[in-house]
Length: 152
Image (tube, rainbow, N blue to C red; front, top):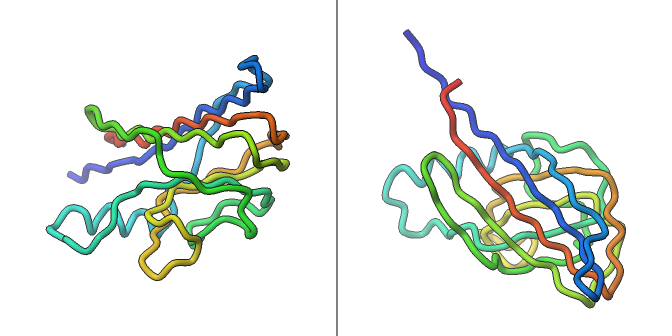
């Protein structure tokens, strides 16, 4: 008898204006890319040189998310350090806030291991494409990303 494991990613995206008023609030799904699957498998053995997932990025790309993705559409609108990372039974939750000062019609996001796109030891865990979120320079964008493992 074979047992399977499914990895599901969900994002909660909240756009707020300068006063903190919510302008957009929605959930969407993501793709765990091939590089992310390899990263997860590599974490199952002692791999001291493997970096941690510590950054989230947003961009204005429109191409479909596919398994072979290794980055977002360049140029990225912003890449920030995660504000929190928590683990619970069968899931990991990543959270990031994209502060005021950047703007764009944001349509994609990803989780990464490095602060610089294309860096030699950068790994991409997952990528999500969604309907445009029009972030003004006075807006903040909060993304909470949940990666859950479940028996399939």
